[in-house]
Each structure stands twice: as structure tokens, then as C-alpha cells.
Image 1 (cartoon, helix red, strand yellow):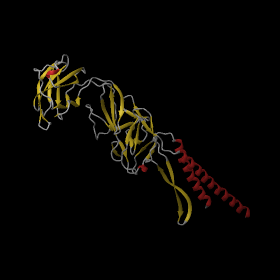
Image 2 (tube, rainbow, N blue to C red; image 1 turned 45 degrees about the vertical axis):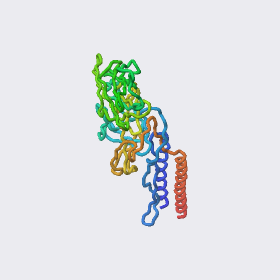
Image 3 (cartoon, helix red, strand yellow; image 1 turned 180 degrees about the vertical axis):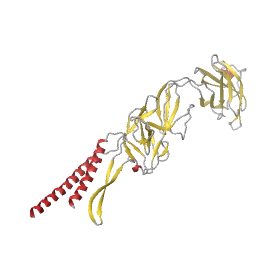
Image 4 (tube, one colour; image 1 turned 135 degrees about the vertical axis):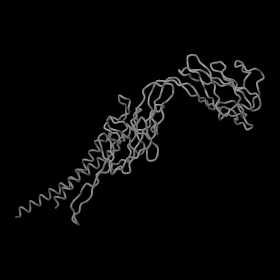
Length: 395
């Protein structure tokens, strides 16, 4: 009986040494999660029968150290969740190894050629939430966009009086109270200037004159305020239209919402004009919420999609796959999908990778313990052999 018990011990320790060996071998593997063997004693009624391996436990919830790489498509998860990838045969895998790049079609793939999954965007750059698919980056230049809106918020000085010199002349600073110039773009991305001149005409009443590239456009626009200094008119955006040679006519809607008239100096607090010149792509950026942007030389950025993450009710039920990945099983339950930073999902850190969470010191100690246990079980075998030999000699 002791012979069979010792054999179960040898088999169990051998399984433990295999696991420790695998942990040590993957100490430098990105996104790897260490495992340990769980032992359980065996009894037949009250008769001891040895030991068995009841299973393996992976330290999936224990994160590895984040290491900066500088690569824009390298991603690490700070917290819970897995990246979702799709094989070329359509099977879903889940991984913590965020080593991603692009293939010949500019689709984001991992080192095994699996496609990173997320929410794509439509032709207008709108995120298609709920429609999960491969994330593909655009590599074309960004075409120019004409300025069509201008959000202008300022304070007009209530202490000022109407100009003493009339009529208004943009070349004479004595004919207006304040002025501000905004850079705008036409349909070909060429720069122009739109200048606003503010003239106080009476208490709480002003006029705005508009000049594009030094030429008057549109008529004077009344800007009025209540006795409390809040804007009373115009309540809707003012559209300033003017033609330009060789390009589409300009139509700019100026929104004065938030503009005030208080007894302090003229100051512009917001001047947000749409439109931009054409730009060349300069790089890719991934935000903490998983949104992927293409950056352009004109200072603009274009949304390319959003990375999704997966979580499971029972992560210990996941099945290990090649390439430091897992696949779902009936024991793990179906994947729960979401975006980084929401609920159980951690945030993303771009330009970094998650190292293996293997503690080499602990693994070496386990290796020595396993060696000791293996030797002890072999000692039982050799002792049993000697006793058996003594018995045979006595016959």
C-alpha cells in the first residue's frame, strides 16, 4: 500500500514541477499569468490512498508590472478585463498581451495575426457603439474642411461710451470700441481672416461689423444686453456669408451665446472656429477609454474606433490557448463586453505592456519544495523495496 501511496505523491509532485517549470519559462512573457497546483488527499472509506491533483489555479486577477515601450499601439490594461481578438477562422480569444500593430490592410492585429476587436466608426467618423468588429485604421490624408461655425464668447466693457468719431472706419481706432480677428478656412483649406468690430451705440446696445480679409461683409449686427449684463440678442447664431474666388462661398454661423456686458475690460474667453487645412497623418494615439485617434499635421485628430474589453464571471474556467491567450468555456460563462474604465473594466495605458506576474523568487522556493517532496516520496519507495527484500530473504 505504501508503494502505491508514494507513486501518487510522485505523480502529484511531477505535475507541480511541470507547473513551476512553465511559470519560470514564461517569466518574461508579456501578459502571462502564473499558475499553481492544488493538491487533495485521497481516502477509501477511512483508508489513506495518497494524494491527487485537484486542479490548477491561475493568478489572473494579479496584474503584472507595466513597462513603457513608446509604441503607440502597445497597450496595457490597468485593472480587470481582457483584450478581445478574432482569429482568421472567426474564433474569439481573450488576452492581456497588448502587443498590437497593423497588417497590410491597416487592420490592428496582435503578434499572432489575430484581429483586435472594438467599436468601428462609419464614413463620417461616428462611433458605431454596439457593432463589434475588426478595428481598421485610415491611412489617407485628412481633406480640408471649410469653417462654417464660430462660437464667440466675450465681455464688452460696460464702462465704455459710444465713439466720438463717426462714421465707422476700420482704419481709425477712434470709430470703434473693440475688435477681434479669427482665422478661418475656405473649402480648399486656405487661410482667411474674419474680423469683428464692436461699436457701442447706446446703453446696453452695440453693433458688430464684419470684415473678411479686410473687406466688409454683411450688414451691421445689433448686439443687446439686459440691465444685468446678460445677452438678450441675437438669440440665434448670426450667419455671415461672402464669396471667395475659386472656392465655395463662405457661410459662417457666429454664436454669441454666453457673451456679456459688465464693467470690466474687453476680453474674449472663447473663440472656437470650425474648419481646418488639409493634414497629413502623423501618428496614432489610444486614450484611457480605448478610443483610437489618428493625429494629423494640422492639429486635428480623427476617431478610428474604440477598443473593447471582456470579463468573465469565472475566470478560472477559461481555457488556456497558445499565444498567451484564453478562450471561453461553459465553466467560465459567456464574455461580458464593455469599454475601458467602466464597471469591472480597467483603463488602458498606451505605449506600455503588462509584464508576466510570475514571482521568480517564489517559484524557485516552490521548485526546492517540490524537489524535497519528490526525494521524500522516492525514499518511501526505496524503503518499501528494502522491506520487501528483507521479507523475501526471510522466507
